[in-house]
Image 1 (cartoon, rainbow, N blue to C red):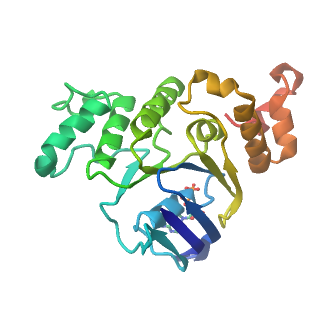
Image 2 (image 1 turned 90 degrees about the vertical axis):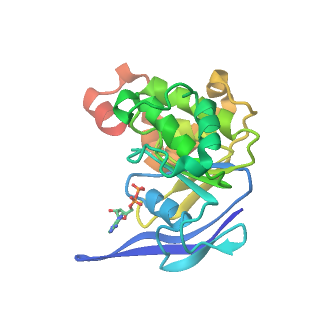
Image 3 (image 1 turned 90 degrees about the horizontal axis):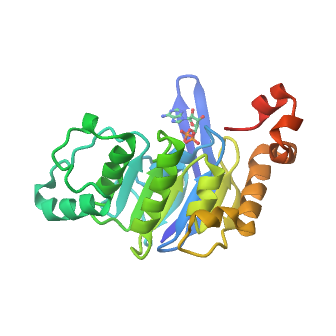
Length: 258
Ligand code: ADP
């Protein structure tokens, strides 16, 4: 469904060129749920913008369904962390679908509410519904649950899987949450620090549907452990597994991510 060949993206800035992506090669199958994890600033959002036709690559190419991506297209739906535009703009043509999508994301009855009257989780549901409005084949999600509290975030993960399951849609999900990536995905792609390159492409062999006990599955724990080691270095990964009280407070707070 998505073919990324030797992709590079260089930003030209007043202070010189910034290589955000370099030599990224990746193939994503139709209907796959793929997460991209990596340190902040490694080019995850840049990659998503290129996939969505919002940015032109400076090297390599991206094909979606065999066709080069040149512009944003209704085949691609975007959901971001901060849903700035919450209204279903120009929905009159799609009113029925908008209604059924709002119902699907659990917002039936809230059609007339103002954004400020909705909780963070509800706003994110609107963002997902909006991304699905034109029935895209590919859903591009950039840290969509990043601003939510831990419980709402986990709940939204289940909601997203419920919506995705059986839809045939391909999802590319950017996150810096390793556990979230493993829990949700068929595959997790780990990227290096800038310029972003693919350093690991890992299939998550966990049965679906995923349930709360999926997170206790040895395959979940193993994948998360390996990814943590790759992204943080083996020493940090080992420390993170030690009981907290055995670590000096300063080392624990400076090394273990939240
Ligand atoms: P991530 O999503 O992984 O945090 P980004 O794709 O946002 O990373 O950014 C990758 C790198 O490119 C960062 O160093 C960032 O500062 C830089 N960058 C992002 N957008 C621009 C831009 N419009 N102009 C110049 N540099 C940018």
